[in-house]
Image 1 (tube, rainbow, N blue to C red):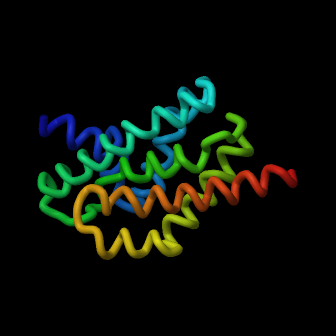
Image 2: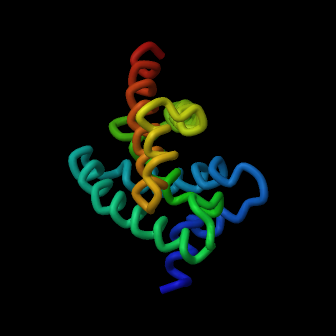
Length: 149
């Protein structure tokens, strides 16, 4: 189980990148997005629900495994945040680049209530929920931007 937790939490090792592991982890989410983008939107969204719970559980277990709270090695939270960002967006390079940049912006800035989840909720859910909020903000912004392009 330890191997699964480390592999999933670090998103196949991208979390071990020495700098900007969250950015690298987000890049690592792109292939999963491209695969899920083939699904109908309702199934894409439905898939995010169990992935959220998996990411929360894995993040909590990885905190114990790494001995660190919200370790930079844990990037599965960036994966679900990016998947939320891209919900309903076309699987096109332009959408992916804009969605990537918007998600990283909102993930770094931590617009409330993301900041609350990041600072106050101290378990796997806290690790993931700030990225969920960032993903929701980025998704809304992405759809506004795409409407005008």
